[in-house]
View 1 (cartoon, rainbow, N blue to C red):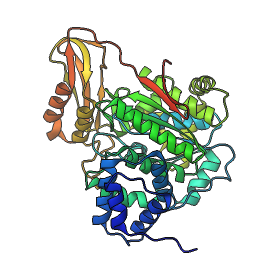
View 2: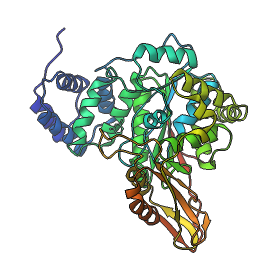
View 3: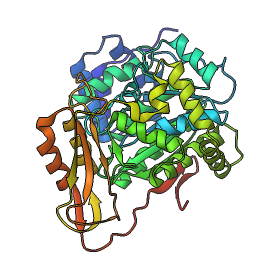
View 4: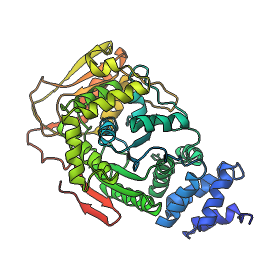
Length: 448
Ligand code: URA
């Protein structure tokens, strides 16, 4: 039967007036747009109507399905076991993928991970991986499947075949002020994740100054929408709400974060990074049915670090994807940035607040990130914090060390660091790193 066709103006008007669209209407519109039968100006108007009036869970799922089927859904059936991935909504110093992917793979759960690049204040896993000399993230789908089958892990960038409709829609949203819509974000994320060929998904949804969603309530709403879509597609999905009021760990910048990840895999990781890593990894191991509970998964995750199997898996995947394993085994052999300078504290007291967004922008100024999609990143640039929220500091003590090849940016970066970190006399209350778990039964307080 030929597919029903619609009048675009009628669909825009319907959404403008707050009405609900059917699956057939949404799927037709996305297909017509992808086939160049609907112009950008009409799609922009439709997106703005979605932004202003929202989409319900069913509509968000229809949108996801249409974007998902604009490309291929990878068939990973030649790799045994339930495939589980993790997605983070992005943060500053968020290097968790680099640590948990080899942990989970070494515990027997296949991890097909398709990641993105950094833009603005948040970093991207692909840029971090590419800071390892020779590491290639551009592989075709056959090689993607081959690496996964051999290593139980693959770490690559998005290919043209994955959700092409999202690529076009995202570019349009970017220039029409319609990015910040929870159902549109959820559809965009889930269409790409579902196309990877996964069986289950763990989501790290961040809130706070360094997160995409600053407000906790918005992050909670996004997590609920993402989980709802995942379940609608028959994929078990669990999300955690995690704090991004300060960078994760100490290192911010591509190679600096890889180096910190290697320390984590060597059992010397910062507490905040390891707590969230083990929780997300433990949940993935549980969803991959290699543990009977998340708690047991967390234990397995800790053991994989302690006995070196996660580090060995990391070395294997770096080698498999063409990377230089010598820098992984001996990070000190990696060439440093031309300029390395300390930033000193201008007063004594306790670190009480950090503007993680501003810190992310300092790393961009130093060369670690992009202001526009086509910019290159400098793998060696970034900074390493010496203090985190709650730490005591003396006047003149080092608060962060900058790494850059742009000497001319040093003064701006130093000023940026000093302004982004608040120091007061009174010790602050400890931050709650993980506040909630969201699953198919709803949102639950997380108390560890
Ligand atoms: N990340 C995505 O992949 N899509 C969005 O819409 C926002 C963040």
